Image 1 (cartoon, rainbow, N blue to C red):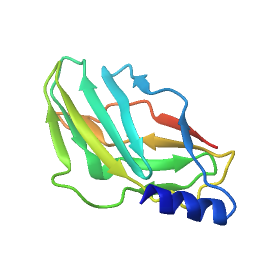
Image 2 (image 1 turned 90 degrees about the horizontal axis):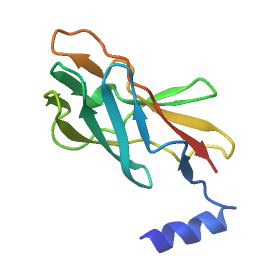
Image 3 (image 1 turned 90 degrees about the vertical axis):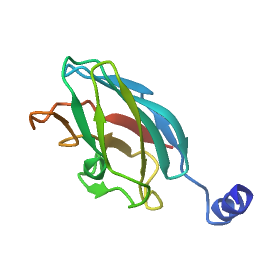
Length: 134
């Protein structure tokens, strides 16, 4: 399948790839996000809770944003979308986004704005995972 995609990319004038600016981001809220793997449009992330409170991660609120100002929701799929992470705990978070219209030279980011909250419901700021489109 990858060979077919590669042939199509070459035939269409080249493919894009996403290069992470950093594979790990830490936030003052005590939440760390790690890019474990990217396979085409699927991003396998790990969210680690270093805070002192239980956090909730809503995968449906994780978005892809660009420096051009657009924001897109993840492609639906998978089982479950709300994860509870205890202090010191971690959870895999897999998200898939439409990437076929990205342009070389853009910067995109996986944004957790509003996706991570304390058990009290208070949103926690989480730094985005940024990628350069090459």
